[in-house]
Length: 253
Length: 281
Image (tube, rainbow over all chains, first blue to last red; front, side, top):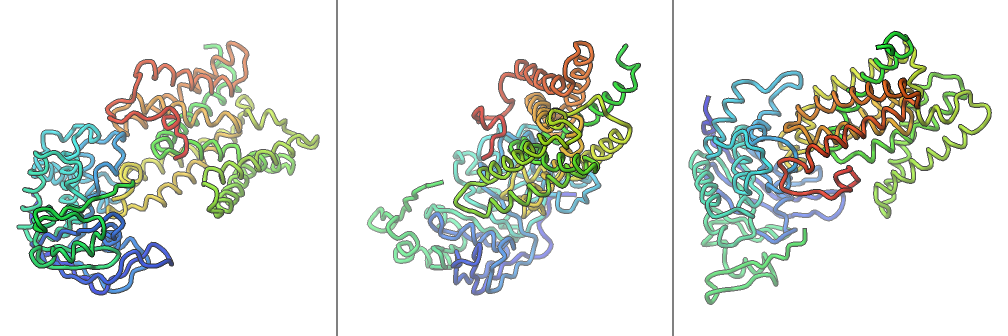
């Protein structure tokens, strides 16, 4: 058994989506986009712009959702690595195996086949040698790769990645980039939340969010100065006479 | 050993070993989920229930269970007031219950003394108590085995847990329900105040020593049982109070672990002493 590409092409189709956490005003409105298998979509926006809300809506975790969401393929969420408890005693392999929990009956052990799958997934992300290393002692980039391996064990056709390059060193960034390129080439859909405009330019499509959808399309079309200003408001800084834009983030968490 | 010849002590020993194992293992998850405060609160909260059951001549186990339920409802009510934090709500609810229990217990009509309710009465363990505690401890053990993976996800990665098939909120509630079961099982023999020691000290020691969750769970169970055993033997030899002796033995084992392993293993981030004690977030 290997970590093979999904048999059927994955796809996300979202139309008129509005999502909220309670009976209050929706945190995100007017989202309409389609992402086909093989596409990586940068989800760009300021903190609180709705990136996480979109992911949670796509995962079906928000009760109050209007509009339609159609996803073909299993969906995995790849969180930021510092969101997990780093003092909890689990190895990299343990974490990869968590991808098999949902299909393991409560009275059974994780199957031998899934163990093979988890090791293969770690191998793919270049973390086979660290399989028994404590997850908390790995570097940020290594942890990120282990979480991608977990998504592979989930056999996800759709991967929702939350700031996968935040706090990652250059070597790991390259490694993660290579893996994401491979996954995309296999026909999976990647949604990559980021607040880095330059990072967003690298992917096939860009979805700009600020409480609602500002733009969606290939980077050349969607990353205009007007769109960036609408997305970031006062926080945007133009460099090189408007050819490069940098978003200033005020981290408050 | 002399101590094993007395039926009274045999039952007490068996009781405390079984309870120590169950409470020890459960404590590991409580501490990982930073719920030590809830553990202490629940134990105190059942005092009025115990007193009322004692007054009515009903089984104390029933009173303990009722006390927990009423306090849980009180906490839920108090938490509705969003102006106060949840730990304040718990504090108010629990102190209310504890005060009420003390007032009731000091009335002359209560057959069981307040001291027995607060500090337990390990040496009066009867066969029925033993069977009840054994069954409840078994329930805790089975639940911990069955819930191992959901608990792992709820602690390690609550953000991604739903996408992996686990609702962390539900897991935490289930663990608190299990805690109520364990406290009900242990409160009669170890007392309202001292059961907390068996829930926290062996787990804290095991978390310093064990390199995997499974190792921590088995270590905590073993340490909990050992604390019970050592404490009871010491109490018989030195003629001191049994419950207090068990609690002190548990803490002594923790101190030993702390000396052997001065800081938490393998974690990059040091926690503050309060966090290490499992103070509320």
